[in-house]
Length: 232
Image (cartoon, rainbow, N blue to C red):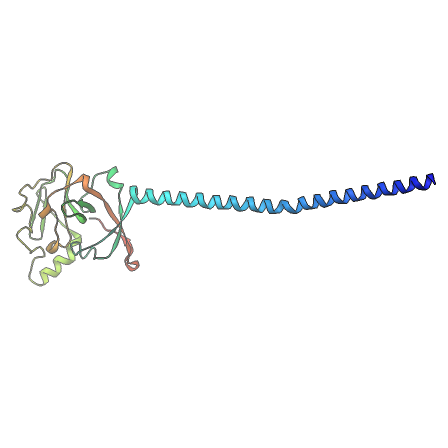
């Protein structure tokens, strides 16, 4: 009797031990199954964070580029034809004149507070230049200067027995509006390429450097006309 009882007790203990091992194994399996889910969740959160960080950096770069380096500009009006036409979109380099002064022949965009808008014109004279513009002839410091960007327009006018610059009492420079022919320090003299139909320094006077937005560098719209702007 005693031997049988001890055997039953041992058997019962073995069964309890086996059940405990099964429970422990089951718990371990459960832990192993939960681990991949946690890892996946953590990986997803990390990826989302990386995307948010990348987008934030991209947005910051756009703001820096837009407000400090380059800016878009839409041509409105005929004053720069045939170089630019209404509706064309340009990229304006805003930083170049923080590095150096404008040069003759460069196309610039500048503020005109009296008009409440920006103008796009070509630099004709820089500080210290003595400028005379009469008919289709431009003289800088007493020397006649060719304007290659007007070559086609002048040729077409001559073919019709006309001069290209033939519109209005203030078409030349100096004129009744501005008798000073020397570009003052800190300013430029700027004309439109369409001299027959351009409100420019012949009417509004010298342009202070502080009002210059930048240099027009690229036509980016329409796509068929994408190109770098020709200066001079």
